Image (cartoon, rainbow, N blue to C red):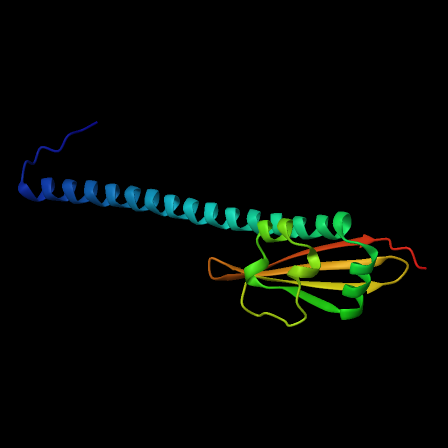
Length: 149
């Protein structure tokens, strides 16, 4: 490679400015990647927590709820779980009838439980949450058989 024969101050200053600009671009790219990684980790942790809550409610309805409790929820129509009871500990410690309310709570996160009856009871769980200032909704639908007397 051919070297420049000129040792003037202007060429040295241009080399330093180019090196600084390249270093700045690489540094800003690394910071941007790190920031995106942290945001993605926070998003995934919150989604995992909310999915665990949906699974807890689903398991509670399928396994631990009596037919009378399901019928009473069916008669109420749509029921809600508010922000204070959406965590998995509240769902595990209390019965589902103690956690639900008929008044809609629009303070996120909240869960809406809709029940409808055909041959089976269709249960539709919808969890609404704000994750990183973006509205997310998680939907789970399942069926439960209840004997008719």
